[in-house]
Image (tube, rainbow, N blue to C red; front, side, top):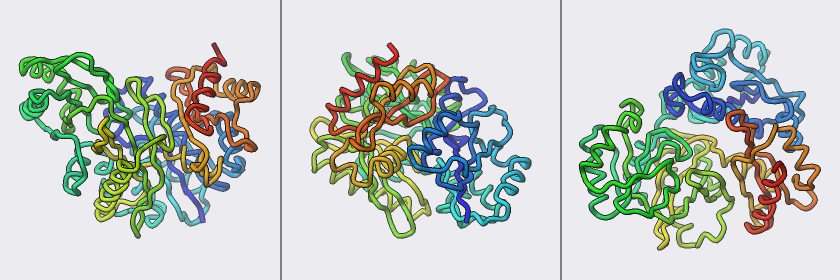
Length: 440
């Protein structure tokens, strides 16, 4: 029985108007898609938007003890947006589908694992006669993946499930958005505005009635004093906020100095199993994550687990199956508010399931912490591997500490992401400082 892995980092909705996306964003998406290689096992067929660098493939398979020679890698012909994204257009290409059928050579497909649940994946499964291989096939085939990755749909599902949310609204027109923003500003609260389907804080902006607010989790912050300023902002940014009015804008209260926590689950036919929790660090958008979150008090953790479980049950009853992440904030006074969800393999999933659970060991969280850092400038992937080995910083299976390169080299900005395995956060910080000095 075959396993088919599909590295569709973004659906068409998550990518937005992919034809107009900056080249740097497309290059970043291509690099991110290759994280699926961490999940590959001997004999798997892996569909990628672009061929991985040989050094990346060799590195990842060595870490996971997978025989790279047994993997069957396929890349569909380019689509309208080029080669960076596995769009529905590319997965539906007749030439690619026939090549995939020949590659499988009549072997039944038992499992289809995709980065993102998408109707295009369900269509490909139908072509192969492998509908049962897609978790929650019925839900996914009718576009359900858009519901479990929408910030607007999240607020409706969370409110219906009694999950604590920041005050706010989902708005489809500028007047409603203006009123929702003013209600929060008049109460003295900063306001976070979110583009539906944007990722990593890159679609977020903050409006504040007072100075001195740090824009954590948003690309920029603006001071606005009155309704006229809000109206002027919306006139300028409404089409951006709504992706040319294709999707609603999400407006919510912003809580300064809060911790950004995520809880991940695996949802199947029997329920939801808690997988791991962690913390996102931003400067101002996400630039590191810590798994598990250090010193997270029992009270907030219990709320996160319980309310996150209610979100899972709501989506499970709709038919969603697979990896699920719920994001939340813990305010300085310990209050928990959920902010969005992601029904897909996230940028955290391979960190704790594979690097943590497989490379370090299933009990890694008892005495180790995983800290992924973004944006290490390096000449190339192979140069980073070589320098880590020479410096003695590369992960050591005997000590169960060191550095694991977590993602492909990004040609957009010449950086990679790496995961530090350490005894505690202070030890991870010391390793981080040494790593960042290697190419100075």
